[in-house]
Amino acid sequence: MVYQTDLKESEWDLIKTYFEPNSKRGSSHKHEKKQIVNGILYLPKGGITWRLLPNDFPPGKQSMITLVSGTKKACEKQYLIN
Image 1 (cartoon, one colour):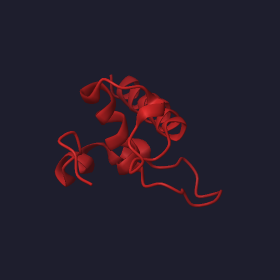
Image 2: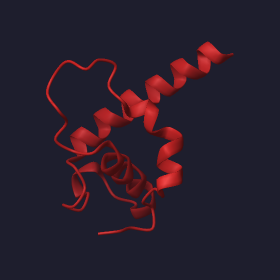
Image 3: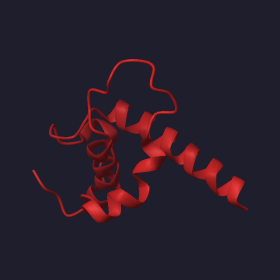
Image 4: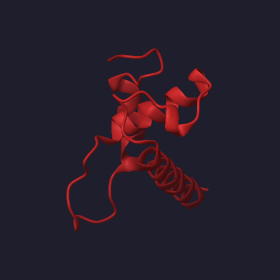
């Protein structure tokens, strides 16, 4: 299903590097990172909690972990640039 809050491919291309793993070790991911970010973006627009995400998004817990990880990487990169 497509939501108004879903990222366009051009938008995803700008931020996807922040959600790539640091290491090639480990198993592959169960959910696409873009879908997780779309779920994160849906929350404030829908005014809902993590547990009430529609079922076509990855689970709320996984979305929250991805948000924290991606935000941390973006902040570290910004700090290194400045």
